[in-house]
Image 1: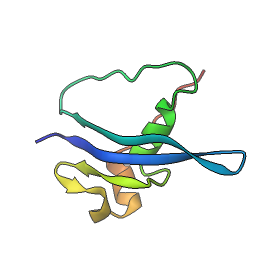
Image 2: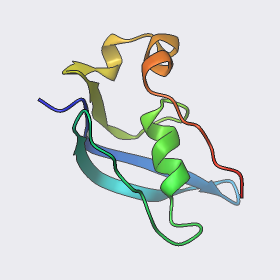
Image 3: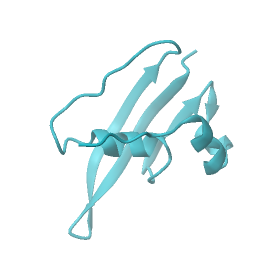
Length: 90
């Protein structure tokens, strides 16, 4: 079982007041004790994906799991104690 699992998530991005689908049907698993890199050009949606995983923005679809428990089983504050985003300084 994965420590963190994202299944079929989709989330929009607001551009000029309109929702633009930024990601659709994104799935991935992260294993405990591993190190991962999330790379891509500026503006590709890396930070937005991480904000969605930390429940800092709404998803249109999909579910996130932590140790097999869905994010919907957590209060947002409980989830954010376990899954947090530490932004980088440019």
